[in-house]
Length: 302
Image (cartoon, rainbow, N blue to C red):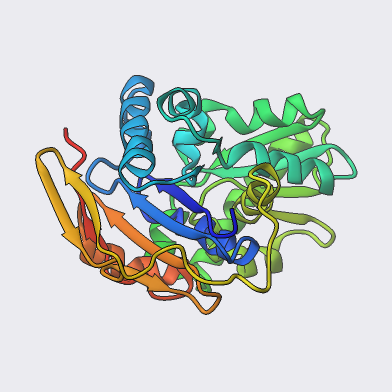
């Protein structure tokens, strides 16, 4: 497939940082991104509910939007619902946690790794378990203040820097009490790549910062057997109209250009959200690093 369709799913719009890296690693693909903004935050819900929501989102991207591969650009869904998603759709599925842990394994010399993430991801211990499976010692810390600071746009602000220093000091104390010597820090939330320049200025010299979004995109290119190309060719869509089900009982026919954002490489991006499309368009462009295009509102049910 020279122009595959890749579905990317997140509970919000932070996963657009994963899409940004996918565009860099697999520029010839066409992308359908869904942010389940009506039902976030996933972290406050039960595993069963998260699995239900994530499976419905995956089925929308695969069954209704024709995604041939699926990337779960949500740490909570990757931690708690990956099995349910894989059972729900008949296409290859990749989460963000295993690639991040694997990148840490490749970067670490001591085998001791720090992980910063949201409360839900830390409580799942998904990164710690993924690190342990690779022979690493992973120390996790929830950093709940970082997400709202990123969404406020304070990605290079003294307040954000001080907040991160406090979290880092707590992590280093935990590592010292366990007699560990971490040399790698994993960014275990899709908001955090926007803080990477700030974080790299603050961490100790020689500490490697692992962007799980970047690691996931590189893994996707390998796992889905999609080699990057500098000659992406023509987009998949032509001038014929498309028919798609937007939600139960509603079918819309439209021209293929409606809602699509074309990148410089010739790939297409089509973004969907289940609520707050104006906020998605406004903040999403910051996460994606380019305009999202018109975000389409969809209804996935309760």
